[in-house]
Image (tube, rainbow, N blue to C red):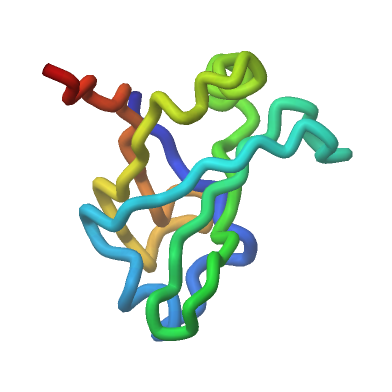
Length: 108
């Protein structure tokens, strides 16, 4: 599944944009108590320079309902999420494109 990240105010160069590159792993966090969107899924990345998780935005509301449902069923751990495209010049809701995949079962 490909999705956009509705960034919170756009990227703030250079702090975020130098770490948010194609292939950067992201973490999806369900926010069921979000007052603006009951299906909210936040997008986070790990800032290695400052040793902290950084909230960069949300999966847009027109793209998040199925993902929110899976996460509500405690299946969120089955997904991996990475950046597949970054365009700091684009509209804030289209600056970061990501891909969400089901993790491979590596058991033998």
